[in-house]
Length: 306
Image (cartoon, rainbow, N blue to C red; front, side, top):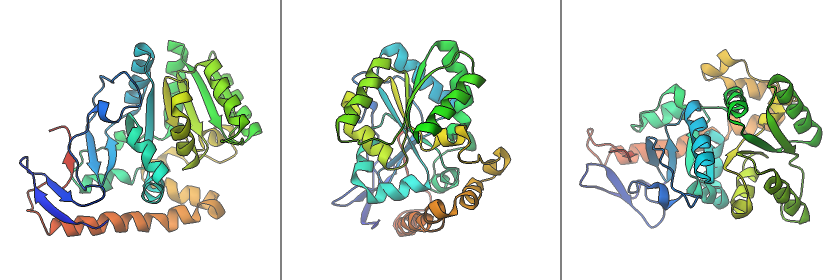
């Protein structure tokens, strides 16, 4: 991230002038990037840093997003950011495309809270939501409201086992699943889309890992018949017990990454030992370059709520 040339705008923010993505853009409206024809009335504090947009969204807020989508018969895409997604975002144009189209983007990785706070974002730990923490409140509310959930991802036996566990634990939960091992560009893909369309879920959780799940949603968004679409990673693998879940207390103090690295070193060593340095390097370089160009009292992070 080259800091480029900077100038102070009338509201005191710093805006970088470059030929590519501006460091700060003007406040985004819901209509400017929404995937739905119906504009959401929900407003959350939003910050745009290097073109990376995040919002201060809690677990209960996510339920509110689903509720509004169902009530208004809208279709919302809900993405999330962690250190891994930021790394891919910088290297994958299709990943960036989906985040640009998303209606809401919440924080999944706890390290992003202090990282964005460094740039002035008023974020708190409650604004971080991992899907294993969301599932209990989501399942409970889904039963109460009669929401249908569709989970797409994981291996066939894993997703089936996970769904059975959820039905057993949450009596009355409406959930249908399909594994994630299919040709996303062939006839199988059309069958998956038809199955989703037939079920008409209120919540579609796509758990095929980054960036495959984001690329699938982006490529098929116009054909996906669901009220809300979430990028769920390997959530069902945790539910089914294929991957041990990190103890809550360890995750709360920011060491979930270490636990996951110990559990799956062959798969995750690069994600946790290499990728974060690239991300921190990008943010750090831009931060210090821009600090040299602005007054100490000037915010270098766009606060779109002002």
